Length: 249
Ligand code: PGA
Image: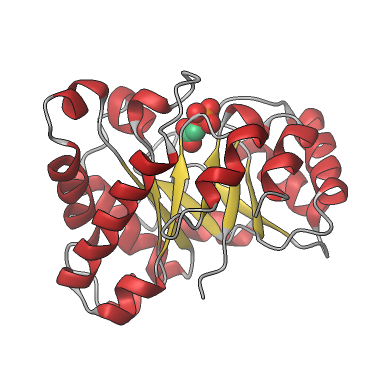
């Protein structure tokens, strides 16, 4: 049985004091969570949020990472730096990174390998644009993202990853995928993992849905057999909205 994971991706929102405040509220509001709860604040907020959630059920995630261990990479943050700040999860290959910051399958793959080497759990984002969906390319795009991200990964490594299926057209748009549309792609990704590895890997990897998930649509989405949680943007910025999703698990 896969445990569901609800992760809040705060993106470029919240100053340090605001992040600490929200983290405290989330700890309180989600005390009775049946799922794993993860908060992914901006880099500068990680250390303070780590203290705010210390000793609670809430886990810390980052929104990106660089693949090199150290060196002259101005502006970048390494896996070791994240680990030392108390981070356990890291979002890799988010569509905003792919769209605005030249993220590609190769950089995703390098980041996933670096994260696994450092003992971080990568949350690997995959998903099609509206144009790709309308062209009937949803499955081929997701397959390309998944194969690219898992290139060279052993089955043991694969079992330490999480996937987030995020249709780009549903991110921040209010246009949520229907539970059936999401389930169809999740099932496809799970079959793909089975063909790349084996049935244990396919059954073991948690696949979150992301894209305009809110308290009022979370229950139906999370009720689908292959949807193992959510990666939440907008609705993770208020503790009460986020709580509504967490309690739908
Ligand atoms: P959204 O973002 O919930 O605001 O659509 C999800 C994400 O980008 O992870």
